[in-house]
Image (cartoon, rainbow, N blue to C red):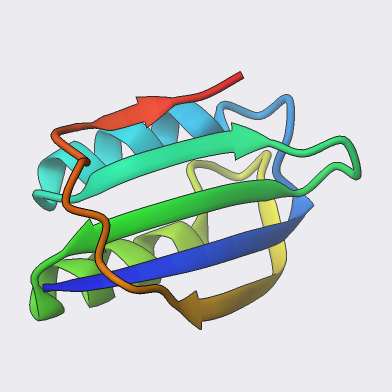
Length: 91
């Protein structure tokens, strides 16, 4: 099991990015959360098995559509938080 904290920069707000992230997380058995930040970036905490988490990050790097444009992803490894049961959108 792995957990990562991601900050996604680029055109990632107002383009369905959080909903795409939640859907992608559920498809890949990822728990955690996603939320918009005031600076226009998106913050993600994602937890899952090694292969699942890397697949998830690769898909997040591409984004949901031609309207989104990921320019950078900051990734840090987190200690495992055992309280996550699902993947949610936070406000």
